[in-house]
Amino acid sequence: MKVGAQAAVLTALILGLVMFVGAGKTIAVAIDGQSQSVSTRAATVGDVLKDSAIPVGDRDVVTPALDAPVADGALIEIKRNKAVNVSIDGVDRVVHTTGLTVADVVDQLNVSEKAQIDQGPALALASLSTAIDISTPKDVSIKVDGKTKKLNTTAETVEAVLDEAKLKLGKDDELNAKATDAVTDEMKLKIVRVETKTVTKTKVVAHGTDTTKDSDALVGSKKTLVKGKDGERTLTYTVTLRDGKETDRKLEADKLTTKAVDAEVSVGTKPKPKPKSTSTPGSVSATWSALAKCESGGNWSINSGNGYYGGLQFSASSWRGAGGGKYAALPHQATPAEQVATAEVLRRSGGWGHWPACSSKLGLR
Image (cartoon, rainbow, N blue to C red; front, side, top):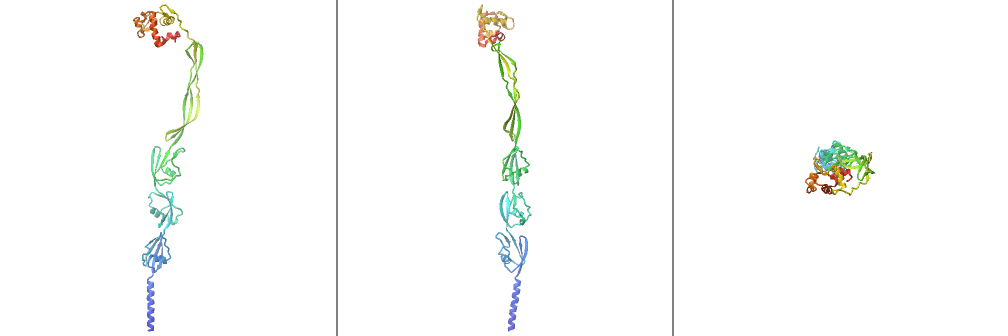
């Protein structure tokens, strides 16, 4: 009986040992792609990691879930959360990711395929020493030379945009932004072409007149002794053009290039002779007699056939227009007094100018 009892206890121990050994499992655990093997008797993923002293952060991703059961030969995959510094269009931020490469972060951010990234997409996040620098494409318009250029660019600064557009700024050109300004979406740039040039123009300098008195010449007479000549000045300007239009003009020099020559004129001061007031027979004054002598040799009845008649050489139309027709059909048929009376009508309306040559000769005008 004693031997039988001992055999039963030994059998139970052996069965228990077999069952304990049979409950053990070998599990593969991959952390960010690096695999290791652990032995465990735990029933769930969470217990396996706890028994194996493998910590799990709140942002880590574990597959299968922590409460999932595990079987021998199972694979537990852990993707560690990583805080990655990212700069998007100059704005710094921290991105949490379980990815392994720069490309994983870019995909997570869902940025444009045209975005420019300083680091290579295959670079492992563990190898990063600086923030991932991402420049997203932006629409930029540039108004220049009468046209508007449009670009979709990842350039980060205005200067880089101009380089991409192959636009050069002259030393005086104006830009509505600084070259170092960051590029923003829908940015509108404007370049004003500024040109400075020198322009010369000439200006007439009017000559003056110097007068001298001539006591031997009659009052009202003038004689040019030296002919005047205008001078010239040269004006030099600095002209500023903006997009081809003049916006400023500054006088730089004003130089007299040709001196004006003043005219010299003599003016008569000798009094004109006064007409004699005495009358000739037939009530004809000495003045009219002198004028008739100059015009017709003093022949009051002359008809030379040249269309002018009488002592004062009236034309037929002038005679009739001044009312001479009441005396005679033609001037040479009237008396000297009648001719003078008609001439007085003409003189009152037009002065001595009706007899230009002789009246000037006699000093009547």
